[in-house]
Length: 305
Image (tube, rainbow, N blue to C red):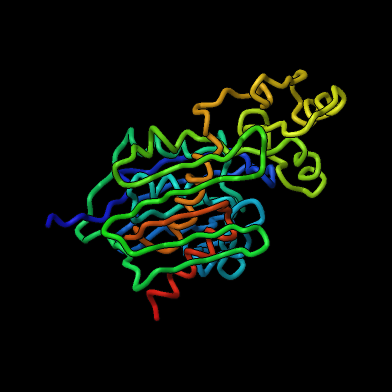
């Protein structure tokens, strides 16, 4: 059998942008890292020792995004970047960032992936770390009915079902395995929000960095012209409209099931917090950051038993 080597970045990449929830501007650099490093964040604004390893044990919040913390250092909304690194096969990277939240950019993993494709990756002199499960693992949320089940397998795969009870989205399914073109089929899929959630989120100091360029807005319930005008004012754009499919006309969908594919993008990023490529068949129903990261933690617990 041909051994598969660990990989890191061939060079550094710089990004700047606002955080989705804080609205604060962050400067971020993705840098190569040595064998066995994994994915590590460095809050350079907090000093030379402010490192946070991207592992499930460091998850400190899953309120509409994934946050990791070690000591006084925290980094939030890491899931799109983690998904890009995992989806493109990066094992080791150092991420320097000078603020608390990873830039949202266009709400997907697109720009990270494009940078990695343009400059390529470097093979390292060590075998890739695969996580082999000792048994089937299942995590459930009895209140929502959500669950994730991971079954030992020869190669990784994810099948998920998204069901918000939405007449616009319907029930969406998405699939990933190592033969799926992550860059072309998943990385471009953007985050989404329901129209009726937006004012609440603004009032609760969330999505301060949300705008018409970084989120798909789903109009599930009837809205008035006044509500649309108010939202347009919040985003500081000319008056928006609702298209025939039930979405605000700020963006055109890349795929009819883009929202389901984005939940898959998120899940790939969250499960990467288990610390390696998972040799398992994963089945998920109504996944989200909380249950995703709980599964990553359950996997780490199982392999340490």
